Image (cartoon, rainbow, N blue to C red; front, side):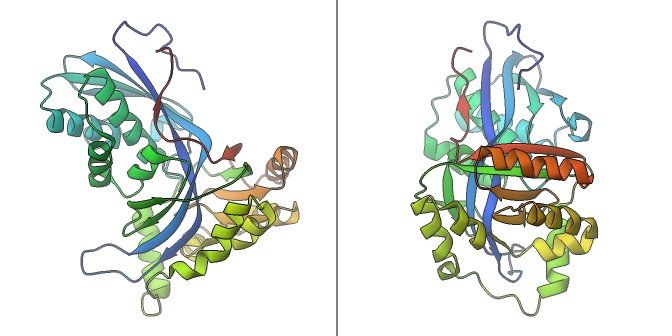
Length: 311
């Protein structure tokens, strides 16, 4: 997606970071530290956040693109927090202006805010020639949010702990997706609270063995087997908060999706298709049925946060 800042000043860095789909998300009971232990399989998909970092007299942020008005631009913004984290870690006494171009749904369960943070980490490291290692960036990412490390890494990975402890996963071939996006958003915290209300007494610690068929499907590049193995423990909680999600789930199934799942904490519904043409057909079914505010298609896996060449 082009940004409105095509006349970039001489010192500027543009970084692109992908959104994600949780192919599997298994959630344990609330722990004493206030977090739920999870076991998840992430796939990065070709919906991107772009962050342009330029020198400035004070830290600041602007936003354009879909749902830009829903993104906070104050100090709470995760990308600004990422920029300050780089400055503190590297001992940089400079400020930066970040311009975000939204391509991932806001509060949609696809880690758009985490992608912004990952892009800001990479952009500020490059802009300031901070020389931080990938391990440094991953450590900063984990301190910002559970999904930020994966936004740095991209591709396909297994996440454990809060989702921030990553192991790259083997994946073969390309997978095609159609997404039903809702502008109303869902709070991740509210979805986890609903999960506790529904399953608090029966939730069990995640078991990696449950995702063996899914991992085999990824290694084989078998889209049909992957579709059959998609899983999300938070789906029932998301539907409890937003019962209308049953409609896009049903539409995708009727359109022949290989598998359909609420992405992360929702409310985006992700439908796995047979190929690119089928993804477009599922997207058309979403549009025709009026069950989404926006409809997107993408492929995965793709790389994590990277400087855009030539900037």
